[in-house]
Image (tube, rainbow, N blue to C red; front, side):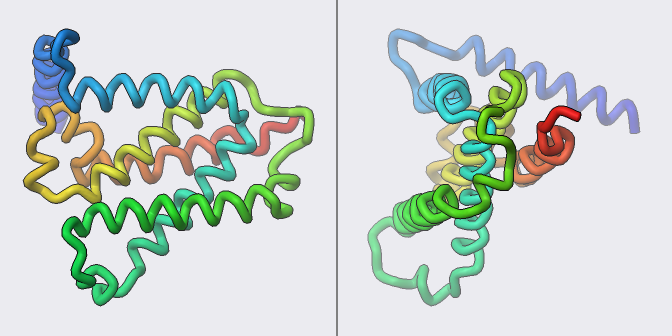
Length: 184
């Protein structure tokens, strides 16, 4: 069991090193764009929004994902050139509507005190997980033939079924471990 874990870790490290060695800043690829977007968005989101707003966004993301996943197959048989574009657009639309209503509801007032925006590490962790979740969801809507164009490292981090499971569960676990954030 430990040999398999060690072997997997070595393969992942080699995949990461291969990914880093193939980065070309002169002719950026989609993988580089995703990596840079991920890091910048996580930092800026965290600093500008604060912990409580990020939690509202996460709740909106989970609700929108549940709605998209529960849509009947008939909806996806609508003749649209790119079904994944419809899925992404529907997800973003539902997410924005839910965020608008949830941010004006009592949920925001019950999350924490009005003065507390969370510790910096909490905000950065939640924003990192939030952006990772959004990227994982968006990339999961892409057809397999398009997703195969990404580097193995990018696919392993964002589109692999276990990675997607990790991105979906990690924010929940982080929120549970952080608790309410109120000082005792």
